[in-house]
Image 1: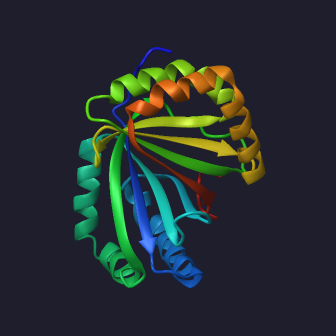
Image 2: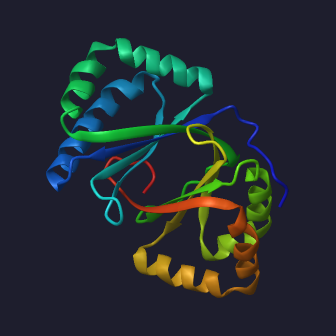
Amino acid sequence: MELRNDPSTAIYEIRTCNLKVGIAYVDAYLSILKSTWADLRADGHGKLVGCWSTDFGALSRVVQIIRYDDVAHWHRSQAALDRDPRWIRDYVKRSGELIASDETKLVSTVMPLVPPLDGGHVFELRTYLTLPGRTDEWLELFLDIYPARHAFLPTIVIWRTIAGRVNEVVHICMFRDLNDRAERRTRFEADAECREFILKSNPLVAHAESIVLTPVSFSPLK
């Protein structure tokens, strides 16, 4: 498959909030987030694509993905939110005591987002940090194997980080449940073509991580 970028200028923000440990902090944060999204993001401050919590690995974590028309739209949105008394009162001050740390990255599209047609999924956010200057090479291998890989590990989007860590690729897979994920990964790792991809691509990777995400009640992606 030929390496390509989505002609759209749209970018996505992947925002990760690491909350203080305890389900009460997660529930309180999600309540704040739900109300502020309804009141503020409807004013044009980006479009919520998905919001998830984590149940495995890093706990007490909430991940949001927000779509913007372009980089300029993201900058305008951040500036407007910083001046909006509702944002400061209803989100910043209320959530500040719940958050241990947070981080954000901006990504552009390599393969456009194709949302599932129905709900009831768990999602896996996979991040690959390649060795310096080797991202294009890794992506070419990944896109070549994509049709075979997708049959085992359904992938709904592929992004490349443009602000945050350089030399980074992010993609999201979806599964019916964790048993489905485990069964599919077993079949993927047993496939000869996929094993060849792993052998060729792993030497190009400096670091890789995976987070299993459970959609919250108000997440558009479910």
